[in-house]
Amino acid sequence: MFKAVLFDLDGTLLNRDRSVAFFINHQYERLNKILSHIPKEQYVLRFIELDNHGYVWKDKVYKQLIEEFNICSVTWEELLEDYLDNFKHHCVGFAHIHEMLEELKNNKIALGMITNGYGQFQMDNIKALNIESYFDVILVSEWEGIKKPDPKIFINALEKLNIEPSESLFIGDHPENDVRAAQSVGMASVWKKDNQWTDVEADGVIDDYLELPVLMKILSNNKNCYTYNILK
Image (tube, rainbow, N blue to C red; front, top):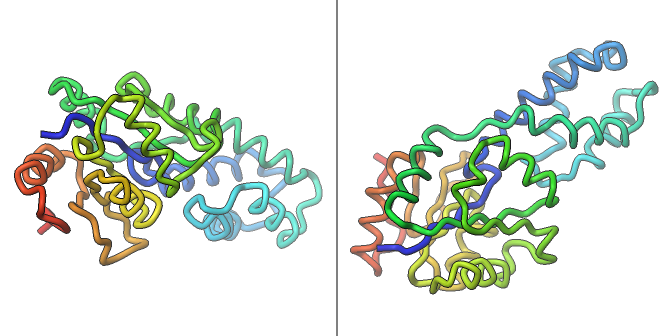
């Protein structure tokens, strides 16, 4: 049986697409006097498009929005500050994450998290999901000085947990940054299904976290079984 399970954050525990949609709708409503010359749907959709699932930082997103929509009454710095201050209030986790984490802790499984991003911003989001207390180790790329897919950040997390790669499982949504990167250091890797990608070569695929205990047993009993998928 695995001794440790490590997770990505965005797109894995945090339902980032839903969270972003909640935030940007609320931002438009709060700043309606400034943004009212832009149709709400247009503002929301363009933000989501420019954001590119979080892979474009918001300074560039807001600079582009100001230019495209001729926003004059607020700066991109102020919009970015609003994002940093308020995104945490709109964080939504995937279904059953608390039940899953509770079960893993009850089974004496060590828990870790490795997430790319800005330190305090990511920690605010983790706290907003009310999951911080479950984790023995949380590594955020800004604070570590390295980011996924660099294997060093996975090795550092495992060393902090005092766990060998072969005894651990990593769960993430990104094929390169999560799945292949974890496999490259000898960890088993599970892909948290995301419609952005197909044909991801993971050791397992999961959609609902209630499936995780069964998948972990299967992977533990089939160390040479790769690309196992419990989804029907």
